[in-house]
Length: 133
Image 1 (cartoon, rainbow, N blue to C red):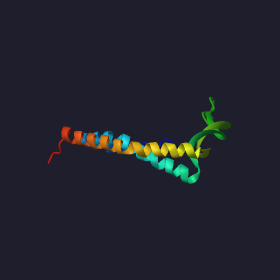
Image 2 (image 1 turned 120 degrees about the vertical axis):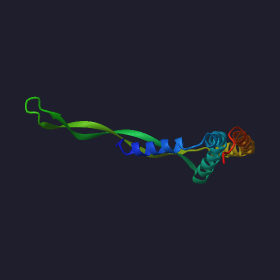
Image 3 (image 1 turned 135 degrees about the vertical axis):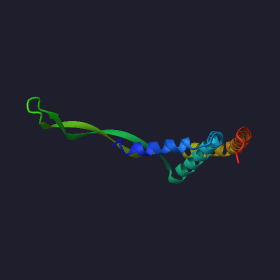
Image 4 (image 1 turned 45 degrees about the vertical axis):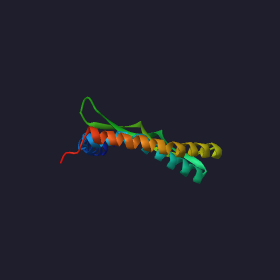
């Protein structure tokens, strides 16, 4: 199963390599602001649903057919063996609505300061890495 991930990983690495130093700087400068926006979105969704969700990877043992070589004939001999596969499941987690509302309020209050820091960081990136024309 890891084989399909290799082309995707390669594509991601190529995309990151194509970023200019300025783009990378701007991405880092905006990271805290983006994370805060994501926290706000997630908390709003939790309040709307009435519960939080969490994705967990759970191992599961399955019966499989394995093969070994016969030392005398060199033929492949099948035998029953076990293998571990991993399933991802989404689990509902109860929330304290009052606590989530307080958290959302704190996130929203922190948003303007985070935006100001992000904008200052972007301006610094633009000054450090002027655009080449």
